[in-house]
Structures are given as structure tokens and as C-alpha cells.
Length: 219
Ligand SMILES: N[C@@H](CCC(=O)N[C@@H](CS)C(=O)NCC(=O)O)C(=O)O
Ligand SMILES: *[C@@H]1O[C@H](CO)[C@@H](O)[C@H](O)[C@H]1NC(C)=O
Ligand SMILES: *[C@@H]1O[C@H](CO)[C@@H](O)[C@H](O)[C@H]1NC(C)=O
Image 1 (spheres, rainbow, N blue to C red):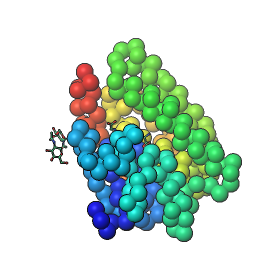
Image 2: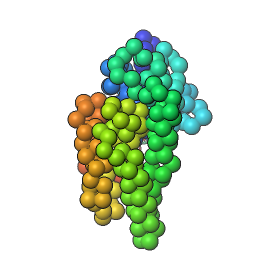
Image 3: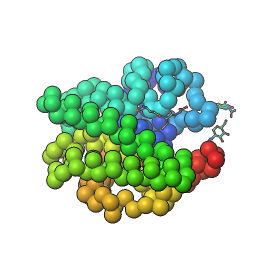
Image 4: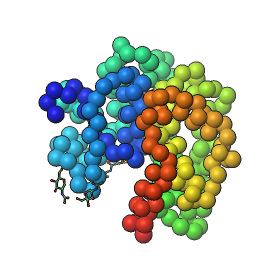
């Protein structure tokens, strides 16, 4: 590890890891990618994130930064001289961007997880909630190209990784997200035109296989 200035401990299917991959790609930062086996975590991961023992962890000059949204903000500040800025300069817009990033973790991730881990009535409830929260996001987007306006940034980075789980959620939950939220999907497609995004997100079919395996394990 000595000598690599930037190291990312990650797991390919992680929505949180994808945020960090997108931010590093936006800034054009070179790094060492280290894939973790989450059922047999490396010593390095346990040392670098002793509190949560979770990926992603960014290691910059040997020092760890944990929690994906915190890492993305760190990247924006540490590579401030590199274009583009990820967080808005305006304090109010910056707070809004953080609000929406936090919202997806609290509401959308939670409802999505419940679609995958429940059945019957509980699953139906999770599906309704999931779509309702996506519609809230779609309302926030409005007619803007990106969540905070004209430029792609922190809030988009926090949310767009969910897209690679949509196929799995649609297949397992028997739902059609594009039909419910066409403007949100148009935004996803706009984001996917950026190489930073398209190269950081895995194949949705591979994610589906992974998630349905996981679903079987949970029972
Ligand atoms: N809030 C964290 C969530 C990270 C997280 O949940 N990571 C998962 C993989 S997607 C993990 O490392 N799980 C391993 C474990 O819980 O043992 C973030 O935003 O970085
Ligand atoms: C876990 O991974 C380490 C390498 O990081 C390996 O040496 C060890 O055999 C693995 N343990 C199991 C139970 O597979
Ligand atoms: C991860 O580690 C577990 C336990 O050591 C092992 O059974 C599994 O095959 C490993 N997975 C991968 C993808 O290497």
C-alpha cells in the first residue's frame, strides 16, 4: 500500500461505494481500487473503519475517511483545484444538496431494502412508499437538468447509483419505475451520459443476480 496516495476500499454492488467512484472520476483522481469481501473483511478495512467496519473507505496519504457522503464532500474539498466543483458554493444550495443526499439514505434506501426483504402486504407497502419517495424527488427535480440546477453535483451523485438497483427492484417487486416516474428516469439517463457515472455503475443484471442470491440467503 505504501506509495499509493489514494486508495478506495469498496465492494462492486455498493450504492455507497459508487458515490465515491463517481466523485473521484469527476475530479479525475487516480486511485487504487481494492475490492473487499464483506463476509471476510480485510485487516486494512477493520483498521481504517474500526467504528462501522463498512465500505466505502477512502484512504488519502494513509489516513481514512469514512461514510460515503462525507467522503464525497472531502473529495470536493481536497481536490478543490480540479473541475468541477461538486457542492454548490451558495450556503443555502449546499444545505439543500446535503438534505437530499440524506433523504435518499433515510427514505429511499430504506423502502428499497424492504422491497427486497419482505413479502406480500409488507412488500406492497414498501413498493408504494418507494414510488412515493421517488415522486418527491421528481418534484424537487422539476424542470431542472440536475437536482441543484444547471450542474451535476453532490446531490445527483448521492442518488444516481440507485439506478443500477432499479432493474432488480422492478423484477423482484413486479413494478415499472419509468412509468411512475418518467422525469426521474430522464434525469438518470442524463446523468448516465457522463462517463464518471456510466463507468462507476455495474450492470443492472449482475446486480439483480447478486440481490436475488442475497434474498434467498435471508430467506
Ligand atoms: N452510511 C454508510 C453505509 C455504508 C454501507 O452500508 N456499506 C455496506 C456495503 S453497501 C457494508 O460495508 N456492509 C458491511 C457490513 O455491514 O458488515 C455510507 O454511506 O458509507
Ligand atoms: C479471509 O481472507 C484472508 C485474506 O484477506 C484469507 O487469508 C483467509 O483465508 C480468508 N478466510 C476465510 C475463512 O476464507
Ligand atoms: C468471501 O469470503 C467467504 C468466507 O471466507 C467465502 O466463502 C466467499 O467465497 C468469498 N467470496 C468471494 C467473492 O471471494
